[in-house]
Picture (cartoon, rainbow, N blue to C red):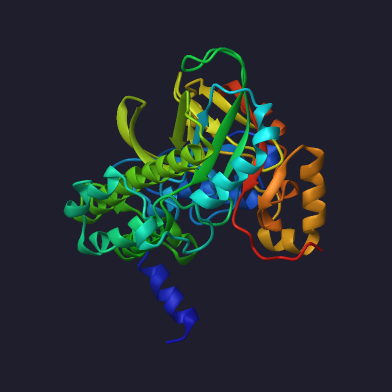
Length: 409
């Protein structure tokens, strides 16, 4: 059978989307490309969707756009959560003046390079594996067999940071108000961004394929396939997703614990949040499954972290609980340029000059993560003033990411 005939047959058996999307709201519409908005409209045409929202850092993703938020009834969309399940942020703030960075630079640099790993498949050998209670979580025993079989892979990658836009960096945290016993002022801080590594990616792929079999959609919308949360498959995914969430949190805990110990530092305050996840929340008087794919939870009073780029500030924010956004906000600046375009248009020399001008030392990173490939974080924050308020700022000073091996020029 030809591909054209096979696609036509698949579409004939597909679950139709609604003709008109349910209500959705968009923040920073002039900053979000039409393709991403079309992805959100498609998600809002699913028969299980109740509401949607798009954050100003949005750009095209698989299924849902990055920065997309969708609430459904009794259904979970694996690609609505994302491939990197429970990708998240964590900050540790020390009661130490950031002026110490200059004198401690070598110590801080070594703690970063020695105490975590970066890159696709990055892991620790058996002798160096990180210890954490998450590896004894009872959910491993309750999970499906293939998930249990990923435990060893997960353990060897515990405390690593992967590739792409993941990072670990020291910098300066400026607090505008008291936070966790710290008074307003400037402090040394450690910020990290990573998720559930290979474990989460395999879980995402498995259940996305299963969803596409169980709830077939027209080919162009197949990545929006969902699992009924009341079914055994839906419950399996929900358990695996939450285990990946616990694992991602443990991953950050190991990074911070080991990096700070190696640098001789202790945190005075720590904050963290997921931004690729699904939550059971009440909206409009009913319990819904809220998918935030690259979006920060921003319920009333909830604290979260919205990073910029390796050369631009990030922010500690407090949610304002805007129901139109399903209590959500942006998860970062958002890409303005694809990775391919970045490699074609930019050099590492240009990237390093930008960073030098901002007072940032780059230990390692690919040119596809240069600050120039991101939207201006100030414009993103301005577009969501009704979603979050800023309570602190973070400015990178020593940055470690995966190195793509590109030359200086």
